[in-house]
Image (cartoon, rainbow, N blue to C red; front, side, top):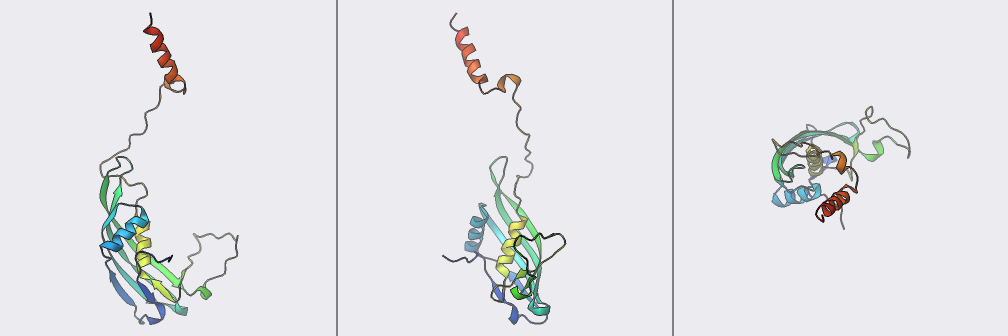
Length: 179
């Protein structure tokens, strides 16, 4: 079993030109279907991304760009599938694992104050995995079809509060019909 992401476009950090590398990524139908399955959504009708990888100090890489997609999600109110747009900016930094600060197990870190880079894996940045990550971040966790509102649950009346209220109602109906 391999742990290869459905959308993979590895770029060797050492091979990046000094002025960076720009990639236009448009995955095919099979990759979009695999991503949709990974995300637990019905489909991804379209997906494209522009990714710019620029080398930095100490073999680090700065990745910027933009993801545009149309995804099919299921409305949490009506349970109907509908298409919606996702548009996310990409901004990530990668560094060799040996250049990352050492974090002791159990140490508390205030992530709002520290912007740690992600580690380069085997000296590469997987631009496809970055695109998939930012697409996932752009998905609405509680998608609602446009124009649909959730009116809330009807509150039970005082006679329906008890779990035995239904039984009492049956008993009343039974005794009223036997006279």
